[in-house]
Image 1 (cartoon, each protein chain N blue to C red):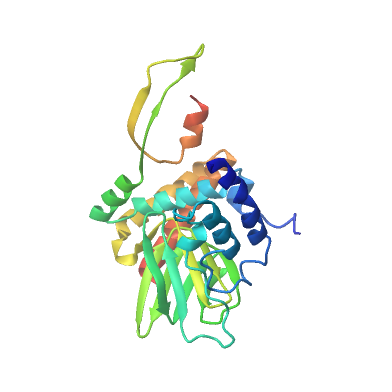
Image 2: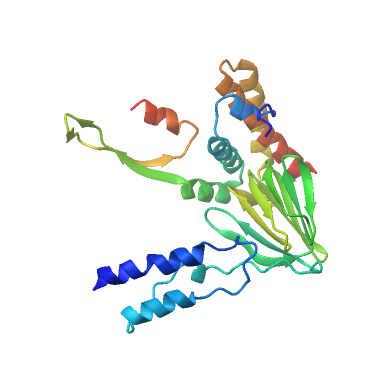
Length: 200
Length: 80
């Protein structure tokens, strides 16, 4: 009996998936009507399985006028630093330079370099040092910032930064293989970014 | 598409983005002040055990039970 039910499932799901792009779908999407009908015919007393879409909050569609605030999701692998927080502006350290993101920013994907991320809300600014990551800015003024490591600036030890910078500068001059040179260069980049974050 | 685009120096040296990103994160963690530094480093510790197999039979596994993820994990795996 279960096998016949499984046979019924793929067809409604396949029909539902062959639709428009996710950016064009309307916001509310809870259950697919065809699937529910087919499910209830076969297993009326069991709850239907949940699909990932029912756990996720779909992104709101792009409004016609620019919203007053930017909604930021700032996540790390081990924690969610900011979750749908409404702010006025964020400045992200993109590889192309410090990029300011305001509500109504054009949809962009940017890779981050080690640098300072600042979140401006009203008159207060929160700064984090980000090691690397990406920022996805969507057309509806949502920004997703993902970083591997992000620390508030007051958790950085200036002496260790200076020591690291000196170490890696020395390693670069004594490096032989391409890989060693690249590692030393990365060390210099990160430590000089840490340094300017502490002093700037 | 720009196939001649300037690749980042680490990719030119044969490093992948994940390796680059992990190196950056480790360097930042090593520059933290004390309570935060030990917290971050212990959070990122990787526990694993390696067992070598010969002639279809496993030898006694070696328990590297606490190992801080560092730059040279791929080399270590390659040298097993």
